[in-house]
Length: 191
Image (cartoon, rainbow, N blue to C red; front, top):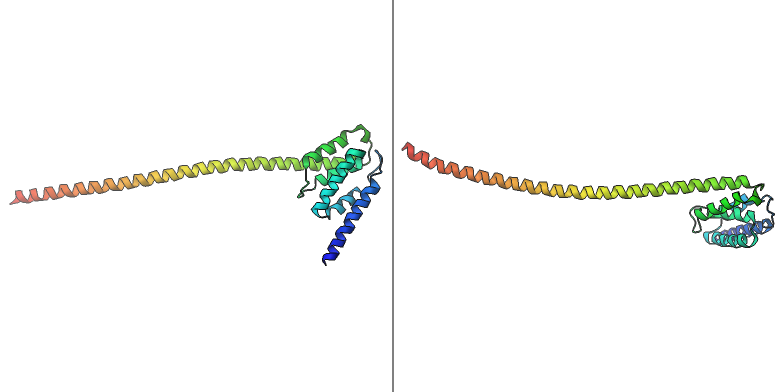
């Protein structure tokens, strides 16, 4: 079973590499054949192989300035839950593609626009999440301050209650002493 899994990973890696090598010869305005198949194949690879693919695409992008490799790299960098996930770099690369006049008539501009929209949406969601986390942190700080204040006020109320009980006890002692002092005087007068 383990050998089958390793075999499948090896086949997927070779398939992704073969597709990538065969397609890297594409010109500036030719369609990127099999780019979605490439992404599907790479999605099945273990994280280390994906990282290696990202590095290879970065090198290829710098050396060859291939628009298809640029889109492949955007797709991989935008892949969530990976060690190489980088929305900022993916956004920069896809914007470079969309604003490059050499790619104005590129058949995969629609795909690039879709990737740009997805990246933008992810970035907005991340910003919203960061904002909500910040709000939550502030609310937690306020809640902690209020809890401390409530605890202090509870302690103060407890102290006041204790003092009130002491005052009641003192008052009761005074009343008892007054009554005991008044009773013998009253008894003496009645004799």
